[in-house]
Length: 385
Image (cartoon, rainbow, N blue to C red; front, top):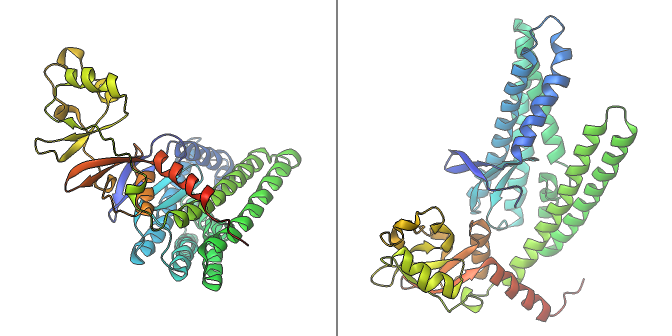
């Protein structure tokens, strides 16, 4: 799911990369500002240093995002236990999301994967509640109690919000799993859940606009609700489109839509020869690089030469500047198109090399796959109901 810019990996947890999108910085700033100017000051009194609410706001924001990561980590652990591949967890403007590479294998798998999210937030919130009550009993500083109280409240708010039956929130996924179990039709279940999710989205938008224009001091709250509504609407539609795409591609092989006129580059070719003989002649974005035996060694593009001094073009070879190909972007001609879709959506270049016996025999791009999908949908019988 694209947001703003490229995701950056912050660290790894249980083998999963924890990433942050550029849009996440806006959320961090908003949370700190709201806590420092709105939440903590009335709970601390007047006789406190001016910097203290800001310090507590940073601590509170850190606790919130740690809770979000724990929430998504619970999803990811259950997803992995049911056989769903998870490529990582990404923090973005609306919180966090577990990046599932495929749809759940069964309705039961989705039910438990979705349910564990709100349950984890309730458990985390309960831990902070107990800590807050303990702090009150033992007379801990008011600042500590205020932070614990905020983390208790915000985790229960997260649990309540995510429990709404608004697909693709956790509650919406629970709803879809139940519909899927009843109808035995993932596409129909997704369609109904997405429609319900859209109704909630429109409700958020309408209520947000009303709050922004009618409630005293409700501008930020109203705008935030409106943005969430738009996000839910787009996310529900995107989820439905993905299910339709997977349904249409199921059973098709990569060789049906790959580009076969592959131009390979010897890894010992000089950069100057590459520019003169290939870049200006073929104008491809990427070229597979092969070793002396013709086996795939990497990828190269003309753009990779922009940071190389022109005086070095005669002395450096393609092997010096080429990029290694991610294993999940090396496909077999008989690979399922659904697997190719998952790989291409995760890859930065949105291209994969099709290899047979170690040698490149084709290139497949996300654009090729989508064009093939559009043609197949146009030519397929219309689904009733």
